[in-house]
Image (tube, rainbow, N blue to C red; front, top):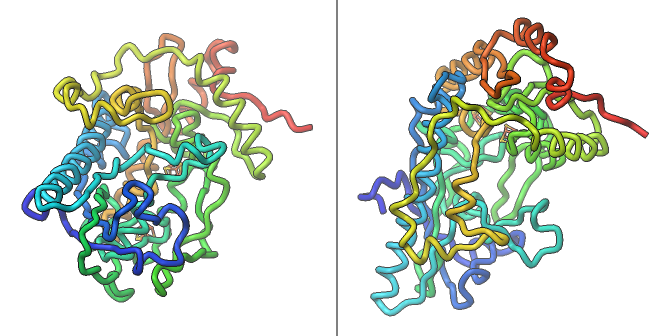
Amino acid sequence: MLSNGALKVGVATPETLAGGPPSVDITYPLKTAKSAICFALPLDKEKIRAFLKKKLPNGRIEHEIDNIETNIKAFMLAKEGARILKNKGFAAVQVFPNFKYREEVPGWELRMYPELALRYLAVRSGVGSFGWSGNVGLKGHGCTIILGALVTSAKLEPTKPIPEKETFCNKCKLCTTVCAMRMFDDKETESIMLGGKTFSYSKRRNIGRCQIVCGGLLGLDKTKKWSTWSPGRFPYPETDKDVMRLFSLCVNNASKWPKNPEEPKGIDLTHHENDPEFKNVKIGNKSALELIKDIKLTCGNCQLICFGDPEETKKNHELLIKFGCVIQKEDGKIMILPPDEAEIQFNQMNPKHKKLYYRELKRS
Ligand code: SF4
Ligand code: SF4
């Protein structure tokens, strides 16, 4: 794996994961599993910078393609690892790195419990460590990595977590301010115990906050000074009840947004269409390929901001804010403007169009 571009590889076992949540049960994808092999692949930092700067026309799409391709590479590497182990007489199964949830759990679409929580496997096996945001990262890369894994019946030697003093995270907490919905607490932490070791990261608020922004339904930050790539400008929700109200308001309206006629072409997946193992991965009633084609990345800021170098992370934060806000015109075209100008242009839009991006929250 290391020769195929992995930054780090580690091994977790049922013993080192003991005491964790159901999403670390490595026998879920493979009943006879005795070990999980986990690894990290790097994302392209240059493309991340263009994404954070909201650089038109290709800043969004080029990072999206890199992100999807890196996830696919993680799946293919895991599949290759599983093939080698099977040739040696062991059972082995690759884990789909993202978007695959435990569909037997009632309300799985909202709860989003993964088949296996790769971030827990990664921190326990020393592939990375937690940053304040709860994203996993590595020195020199920060959180700009994608995790992959496979599980096997082979009994492998577990690897050790990264010692606290070697973490990439300096607790700058810029990751908390680049979340438009303030998903992460900037003071309190929560912890998880895995195989007798405790791992901590910031306390998270209602996951609906991330689903709204990361789902592309809303982009304007709480401060109204910058946005993600989403043109949604709905009001900031203070309470969990407001998050739920906001969710239905955004879903209803965002579905009516016009298509951007200037949107560059997304990822080409034709070369994966004949790969049965890839094609047959189902998520809900869609194949993974169909789902990937529908992906539109507009956020990911909490992960992407963190380059694992305080100066570089600070620069990312400055760029995100400096380049202002996205608005979408009546003809569907996207504009990136400084916040005051975006507000003026938005207010000059046809009222019917404006209502698709901003409405007051009705409180009972
Ligand atoms: S931005 Fe990175 S280094 Fe700063 S607190 Fe967040 S995870 Fe840690
Ligand atoms: S992906 Fe975006 S919306 Fe979701 S928690 Fe991170 S910064 Fe917030």
